[in-house]
Figure 1 (cartoon, helix red, strand yellow):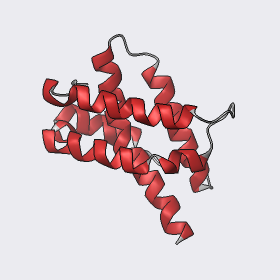
Figure 2 (cartoon, one colour):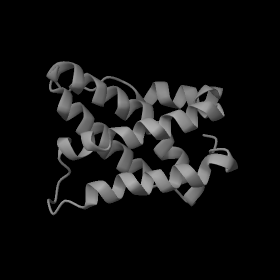
Figure 3 (spheres, one colour):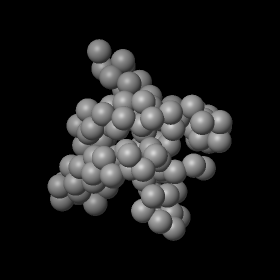
Figure 4 (cartoon, helix red, strand yellow):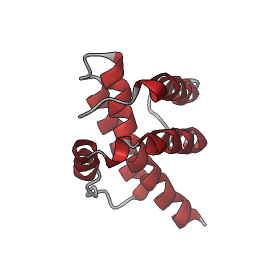
Length: 124
């Protein structure tokens, strides 16, 4: 996995903190789907910043995203989003540097957005 370009790393990190702050504002022990969905605009902004840098089109990163983007066995699309969020958290905990943490987060952004979009399509 390649890290994010230096020019966007700080911006992505700040937006990522916004996501975690929004979710941690809840007093609940478990993340609610509605809380995740409320962060969609932040995820979209991160996606646009990262996509414009070419990070997603680098072969190694593209292949990782494809591998992570496997459809879950969850019959409930909300459960699929939750499983993806938990998987991301587990992967982030293995990062050895802040740059690696940011890059791993960025890899999950398009997958989380895909899951959010599926939920929005079902509720429309």
